[in-house]
Figure 1: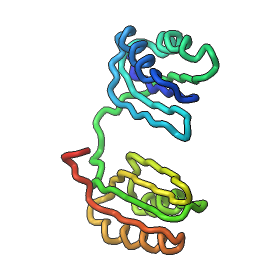
Figure 2: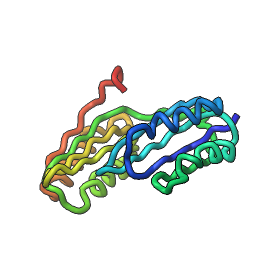
Figure 3: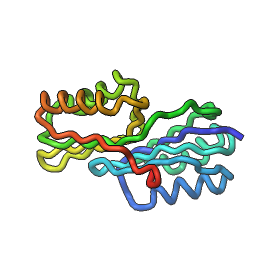
Length: 170
């Protein structure tokens, strides 16, 4: 059994998720982790599955991309194995007028503190830009990170909040 990372991107249309999931199910691939979203009319999905060889999955997905509207890629990946402690989970929210560098500045603060972004979404609605991220921070760093995020947000002219994640919901 291979562990595979699969991406599917292209112009959105109804049925892409069902089509991909059906191909994988027919091959006996077990979908273990996935994320999917629409980005301004474009579909983007990334998933991890365990199953047949990468070449077999590529061949089975190729008809979905035959018309040139979708691009599917398949890559074998190494299973995680034993994971080091991930840190303490938090939710970061940033909102304000759209401007260049918001994600770069905020994620740099997290990275410099030893944090890790585990999920991130951004959305532009009119002139309002919103970032929501799940992050893991090293124990005992919350106050320092929150202060640095507040300084970075003030420089950018945006609002920021950092709160503990409700681990029952993650």
